[in-house]
Image 1: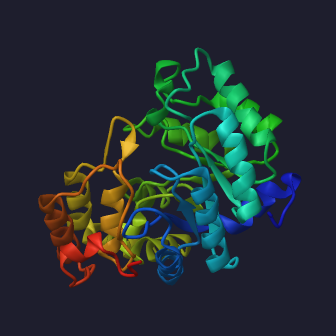
Image 2 (image 1 turned 120 degrees about the vertical axis):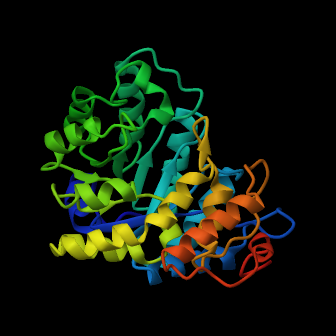
Amino acid sequence: MASYSRKEAREWARERLVGVANVIIPTMTADFKRLNEKAIRHDVETTIAHGFVGTLTCSEVAITPDEYEAFVRISADQAKGRIVIVHHAVFNTLEDNIEAVKRAEAAGAELVLLGYPPYFRPKSLDEIYAYTKALCDATDLAVMLFPIPTWDFSRLHPSDLPVPLLRRLIDDCPNVAAIKIEGGMPHIMAGIEAHRAFHKEVVISAPLEHEYTPLAQLIPIPFCGTNYAAYYGPVLPQVHKLIQAGRYDEATQIFYQLDAARKAFTSVPQAGNGLINRMMWKYEGWLQGYNGGPLRHPTARVYARDMAALRRGQEASGLNPTDDLDEAFFIGRNPA
């Protein structure tokens, strides 16, 4: 259960959502029949060692509700309060998501990343409001709103979740404590607008590494997540600390240092038609010491050409990827 009340959610977020949060993806056993608990614990420990302040327990994979609850529980048990466990609220229906958030809260999650199902096709912003408020009302956990074109709300407004809608939700849901600003991508106007309107009330997260590093030098952005930063190992948490300390020149030099890795990352297919290639993210983290290993089908695939490009990019940026052969990724560091 959360260590704070609904009315304390924003105060809690101000205190705890300072830093960078990555994503961990559940590893299955070699026969794909159950969770690999040792691998999950390994990834939580690696996350902590790399300096992250939180992690998203990814549900956007082939996993049952019971398995997902166990995934959250294992992660929270291993974390023991050292990092924030973020619930990934993207199950099939509103009813499924209400059940899932209650189970995740009981299992030890402390923050909700609120997404929307593929078959949720609102005809108005009022329908988005009703869905979002119903889910917020179903939990005492702090909620991070998530405008992004993935939901196809751009057909209703270019910013995906426009400021008047965000205003209603912040006013009506005391546990709305953060906004992850990816609305209107690839443009940053919607994110800047949300920051201008709400940064004094809720935590603003700029999760994209290539946007966070420059923007946070101009406007106060305390949180960067949840995101693919496991690909950069411990570097983005280090950059965050430099920026918060006002050491912008040093942060900028690291931004340039990461250029080869960043270009390699963008050169391979990270997502398609609204679905992130979580196997690709798993490989990217494996290069930096995370577990890797089996991910249940159906899943997108990772090809040798993409693995080679990602590895070369890390090498050119001085990120020292593992010397293990890529074949070892498919087995994982803690096989079971």
